[in-house]
Length: 150
Length: 74
Image (cartoon, rainbow over all chains, first blue to last red; front, side, top):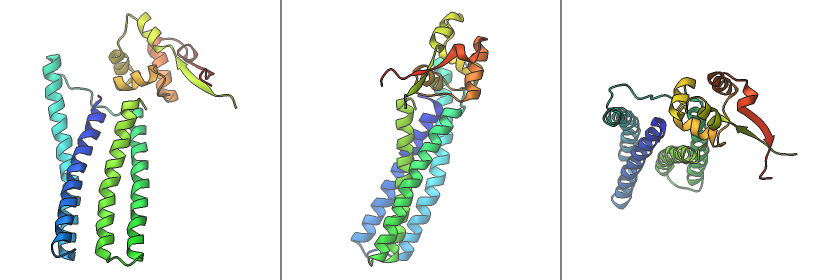
């Protein structure tokens, strides 16, 4: 497993955690007082900030852990080659393409929910939901391409 | 239209160059070992630049490393 593949796997795990947190809170809100604007906007803020912070922290942690594992395995303190080559870039592009398609369809579904009479907060929550799902699908596509060879 | 596929002799060439490992070749051409594995297995077609770099490592012309042949699976 290359460094890039491990990095995508870590990104997938953090996105799944964030999706879980988002869904748990939304379900709690719906079962309680329903969707309240302050609650939904606060949750959206947390999810977006966590998405950025958790991803950066997880990547740094992966780097450190992989360097330690590499040093223990080889017995050398030399730096492992954390490089991104042309295949990695192509795989990332394909992942982004799938993310974009999923997010576009998600935004369309969110708009349709508004058109058929759902409140704007439902539309907003759906957009946030599909943004996280799009990220997850993009990561899954990348991992599948890495596993297949390309 | 007849289908073609890119084949390569990288595995054989590595063997004839002091049994060069995939990792050694990867370091020399500046890619990951996984990319060399994918190229050798015919799963990934490298860019023209990378193909030239691989040929340069073995010191032979590009056409001796890669060939464009009709797809046998068709």
